[in-house]
Amino acid sequence: MGAGELRHRLAFDRREAVDDGYGNTVGEQWVEQFDRAAGLTYERGNEAVMAARLEGRSIIRVKLRKDSQTCAITTDWRARDVRSGEWTNDDPSVWTGTVYAISDVDAVTDRKWVWLRIEEGQPA
Image (cartoon, rainbow, N blue to C red; front, top):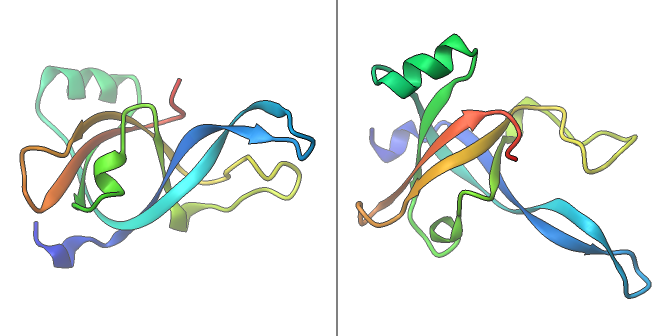
């Protein structure tokens, strides 16, 4: 997969304490850190992937250009498909589109790319 195959757009969020404007924190909320072009490939073949398919979950391998922001991604973050939804008017913290839990991050193996393994669904 070359750089020309980065056809998708993913935003990456992490939980942060939110200020209520009076100097207090009101809990943790997903806050967007950045978005990037990404290449998505559905995984197939191994036992864990087959078990996930039986449960109706998709396991996807993601390819991102390596930079200081993509190297900061950890498994407690989440990814969102930017083109699949929008923030709701009723609750601006609710995304109507596809959300992915990040289950694996490999920012070491490849000098040019960061590889992620993501699963459709909200992270715990």
